[in-house]
Amino acid sequence: MRIATWNINSAKARQARLIEWLDRAQPDVVCLQETKLDDQSFAEAFDEDLFRRGYRYAHHGDGRWNGVALLSREGLDDVERGLAGDPGFPAGTHEPRAVAATCGGIRVWSLYIPNGRTPEDPHYAYKLEWLAALRGVLAAAAPHQPIMACGDFNIAPTDADVWDPADFVGATHVTEPERAALRAVTETGLVDVLRTRWPDDVVYTYWDYRALCFPKNMGMRIDLTLASADVAKRVAAVWVDRAARKGTGTSDHAPVVVDLDTAPDGDVGPMVPPPSAKGSSGGGAQRGRAAATIRRTSAPRPPATPTPKPPASTE
DNA sequence: ATGTCAGTCAGGGACTGA
Image (tube, rainbow, N blue to C red):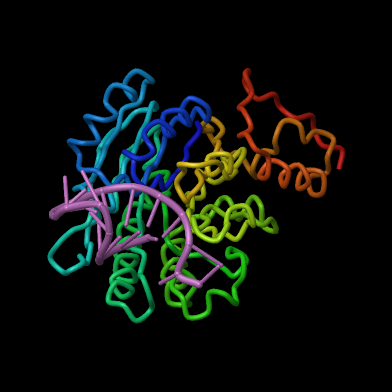
């Protein structure tokens, strides 16, 4: 199963690109953020294109800002809109920043964490409270089912996730309270599967529109794919689809894509190496391939036939 | 250079948010 997350910065402005991307990338489940549409407008724009491609969807939006969606061709059950315990901004209101559903046996969340604006802004406190509420929701869900919590977290987990840490001193997205709030979320038992898979690679998911940030690769990794341990074990590949950020008329974010092997019947041990890693002792050659994969201009395709078992390692 | 976008309301350009 292929699951992706993408902040598309307006589903309406990105309509043609989104459909083209679905046809190219062939995701089974998609978490979208910043659709900037109400539910009715999303339906009018996307019903036909999505249903024809076999996707069902759940959209949660109220118009001008925010808006999240889940698309799935692997089932879409027990849809839940909004975040329990959402602190509200202002208090008492509820922005559409979360939608969840069960897809292919996994409880999937599409999340758009508040931006925070600046550490002094009331929006920053709202961001931290929102993350605390998210932690509560995921902690309550975690013991019961496989989980993937994906979306635009508006937090770079470490300094390795920003192009120049010095440039971000005093700015939101990198402060210790935000990172601590994110750790509290992952400590419910979730794994940042991209960083686990590529611990030493430079990987970004967002580049500001301004100042040639994308061509210069001045980016941040703020779009995360968090998986419970049982799902993390099934991860066969993870990459950022940088091709979707190229050219004009793009979002300022690129999709993050995760391929999962078929759900195992029992204990599967460590992550399965990619099929072409045979003969490798695991580390160097695989990592070299990995860097190339992340930087390539088109997404790697899934094998047309079921993944062959790699030969038994001699080491 | 806060250097670019997208949405809205407006009314052909301002603002807000990111």
